Image (cartoon, rainbow, N blue to C red):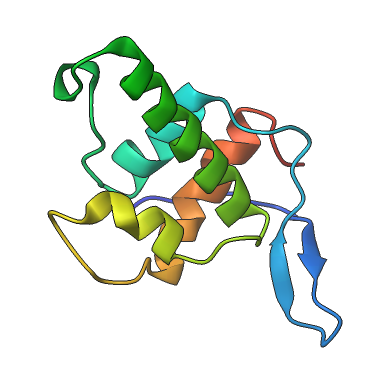
Length: 112
């Protein structure tokens, strides 16, 4: 068992009253985005060795960073993240996975 103390989490709301996404103080870096996808969601993201040249790897990381940031603020849905799990799952990201993500974002100061 693990306990998370999340406190208050600010979210942006849709006009119909449903939560849209998190309010981030800053965008996540590539490293932070990779950590969330790999370590918190368990999705095996590509490494430098998976690419022929450095530019392809850089483009992959830029897209990953953009998708994670877009997903967190509610501009993209789960499919933007689950496309990285093409070889391991086609399941949706469960709501319980949000808890360690919120804890991590608070720890690194991206959300209040």
